[in-house]
Image (cartoon, rainbow over all chains, first blue to last red; front, top):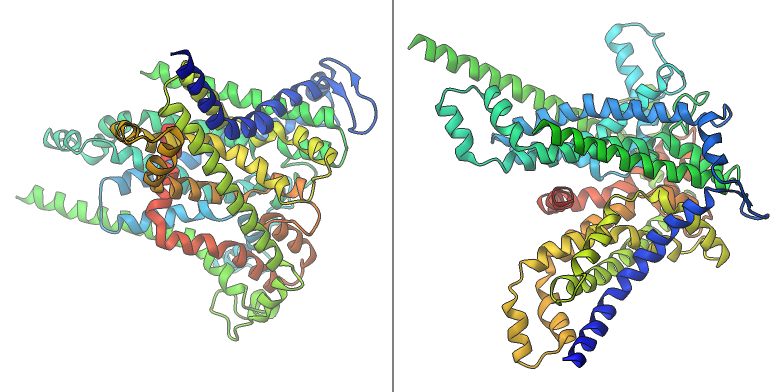
Length: 294
Length: 283
């Protein structure tokens, strides 16, 4: 019996080893190290100076870093995502999910932007937003008949964050639509038909039958939209890199700048840790809210 | 009768409205991609005014030659393939083995181990960028294939185990017992019984991991800033910086980075969609 136990233990260890090495070595251990680095003033080369929570204090008070502004920006993106992007996704999912001609075609087209690299989407929209030759301003000039019309979408501090949000929406509407579509499809057909027989309109069926059945998926979508906005990096990096005049800075942009331009490994780690904490906190809060609804 | 007729009529009108909206949304989705394809074959004069939305008057394939040669897109493309394929192989091997240990062998703590791996689903890549960067620079491995492959594999692992365990749990346990009676040990059971039945999991995990690696920007631009080992996202970004005034070659670079995924998507749309759903619904 003992021999068999030992045999099992050896096998289990052997089967788990590659995954554990990768997971602990590249994820778990570095996260702990990030936490440790965040307590030091360190530029990566010289001596580390232990400063406890001074980095965190600086993060929230320093006017140079502008972390609070960046955090507000990412929360604005989260707000846009939840209240503009997700309703569009839900509308599309409900429309396609009840079954109609061309359903597969529409679904596949709407999901396609998710597969395109964010760098490509960013570069493409940079061209579309180009004040002189971009397709957007050209179209507006054609429609309004005003040849001088030409806002500098990404170069105007007042417009830039909104303008940067549009490609984000364009890319991810399809992603949330697909998840919600799967949710709509998981609602039993009999439930729908029963409600219809009772005289419910299509809107009422959606409101009282389909959407309540999709709560799990909606929760996942809201969590992804909010944590995704907090972590957002790629599209902002390509479109504006935080500019103009830091109007579109988000935490990840500051993190990369502190790390690899400023050489401030301690502060960079602090921002990384803050991001993880915020993502977990928001995920918990959203979970709570959905639980209370029940 | 009148009322039912008018209801039918109004629902018919409503139907047209719905289709009109869907088609507008199709155009919103496809037009930027169409515009990208066409301007990748035009010169500046056409893009900037002569022929903004039409098909190119003369198809300038030289833009592609420029992107591939002086823009280095050819090398970035090969790099992306090497990094993505290696990551997929490592991720699937490690995930299958670990999942086997957690679903087919009985031992105390296997559920806890599973939950431990699932932590990886919620951890953003930001969390480990500094320590990985410092370690890589210490062992002089910045600017190499493994500088991306190892982190990508680690961050794909949680999702891969999640998907793999879904598939592996559906394989009847009787098969293991039958194999044991036939004299197979644990390893033989794994390689000859379980792995051959996991083909659908291979494609689901493969697709998911491929898209993560192919499109990832943050690690790619930080760990491999030198030209030699850059992958497509960082390469496109770099090339766009060099060709700010000439749009055609940039368009070509964007198309080169995009068409492999879109072509695969045309043939495997259902499979790709279901791998995204599998990830989110269970996670």
